[in-house]
Length: 333
Ligand SMILES: NC(=O)c1ccc[n+]([C@@H]2O[C@H](COP(=O)([O-])OP(=O)(O)OC[C@H]3O[C@@H](n4cnc5c(N)ncnc54)[C@H](O)[C@@H]3O)[C@@H](O)[C@H]2O)c1
Image 1 (cartoon, rainbow, N blue to C red):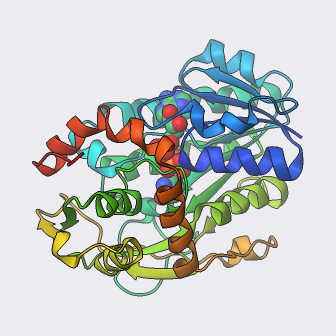
Image 2 (image 1 turned 90 degrees about the horizontal axis):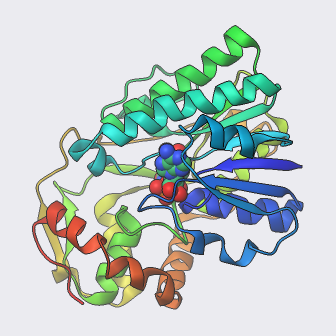
């Protein structure tokens, strides 16, 4: 299969591309703008794989998309601005990429009659106190990030309804694992714990997330791509839920750090309390999450411990200024 994978140099996209190239033998073109979150290093070992190509461009660039999409069988779109905190501080790029970028991709797929998978998030449903969201639940996003994702999902659905495009949406729960940029909870806490830096916990730390190991989610996206029905949405959630503070404590234990590093900081504005997904529809396609949270977290901590070369340039670059703005204190060395 020949795929165009947008946002394939980011965390989940690069894990997906690795699976497609090494396990399925797909020819993959990655189109990625390489924002602060995208890194060509994430795809380093695939550079010489047959049929692999990398294009640096934004999905909102119609010419670049038209060139990259030539001859492909399907488009999978991971490209997005993805950090809720940044969407609160500077929402512009979130809206541009999700709205204009998704539109450009959909138009290109429509012009060629190509299957299209939009990668989305459980955050579009908003927060849920009890029970779990199904694909029929209403969309009630709370942040500019989740609202931008919900808008893109609706645009994708309209292209199926109006033009008959083979378009599908795949909504994941909170991903964690190798190659995740250390602004997100788990890698942030792992790297800070390994360095003996403070561990900033929002509010009371009692927010609940439904965790999925990135390789399980990437496989879920592959199942939706191969077996999903056009026009349908599929939730792909993890096997375990965990309270944020408990996640931080487990990371502290795995890193051999001290709980004294925990520092409660002002809660994120509009912070959702709990996310939870039901994924029966994806299971009916033959997908099942394989990695329980305990095992996945251990593997993730081990990966960060063993891959200093990957995170050292991030932790010594612009990230330091972002961190200081966000948490009001400098990172240690
Ligand atoms: N991380 C999660 O927990 C999670 C959960 C569910 C769904 N998702 C969704 O999965 C997708 C990937 O998330 P991630 O965590 O890998 O994010 P990420 O921030 O690690 O990667 C995003 C990638 O998109 C690229 N990108 C950003 N804007 C672009 C543009 N305009 N044109 C082309 N490329 C652009 C970036 O350079 C980067 O490589 C996103 O759509 C996100 O909403 C993420």
